[in-house]
Amino acid sequence: MTTQIKICGLSTPEAVDRAADLNADMAGFIFFPKSPRHVAIETAATLAERARTRGLVTVAVTVDMDDAGLEDIVARVKPDWLQLHGGESPGRAADLKARFGLPVMKAFAIREASDLERIGPYNGIADRFLFDAKPPKGSDLPGGNGVSFDWRYLAVLDGAPNYMLSGGLTKDNIGEALDISRAPGVDVSSGVESAPGIKHLGMMNDFVQAVHDADNARTDKGRSQE
Image 1: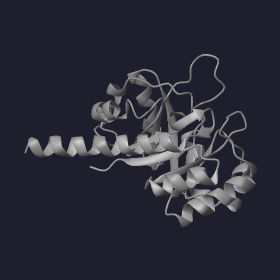
Image 2 (image 1 turned 90 degrees about the vertical axis):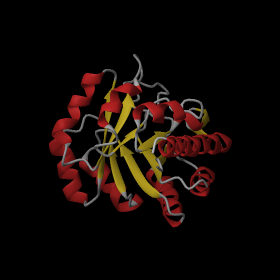
Image 3 (image 1 turned 90 degrees about the horizontal axis):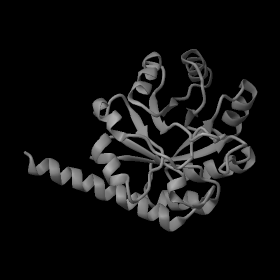
Image 4 (image 1 turned 120 degrees about the horizontal axis):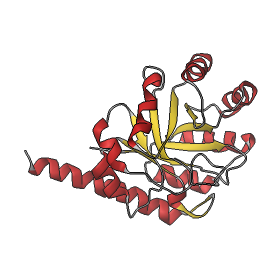
């Protein structure tokens, strides 16, 4: 089994190149001024083009953004996916998907098992879900807080629907996270940073290698049970 890897909050050519060198699947660019990972549209357009030429799928991450802002991002950055990381309703998600002709990833903040019930109205609309931890008290950021939730909540999904696991993932816990959740994809941001918003190339290496190691361990385990 191969876990899809999304590295989010990229803001420099070096980080984009390293993500590509590591054969990550997706590159996320954040458009949220409160975030230390926020990038200006001009910068994101250049980085996204660089990412695409290296084979990365590009994702524009927004939080309850208005139509004008989204239209500007889609026109200039040309993302392959839209990630909605706010309180966007099913109707809003459907409208944006139809308007821009792009697949939509809808993020949900999880603290307890019942939080997963909120995905129901989005089934058939969102092309992928992203499950992140609810932000700690006092945080203005919907994601990228470096905190996790109980991964056992996701085990009941058994890899379906299509989703990515996020929230507090590092090289040290990703193996356990994948073993427990059986997530088909992972999203990392703060877990590969030396400081908020500063991607560390060595930490990116270590995280991706840890995902590969976890994949190999699960494959070996599956073979031994045949």
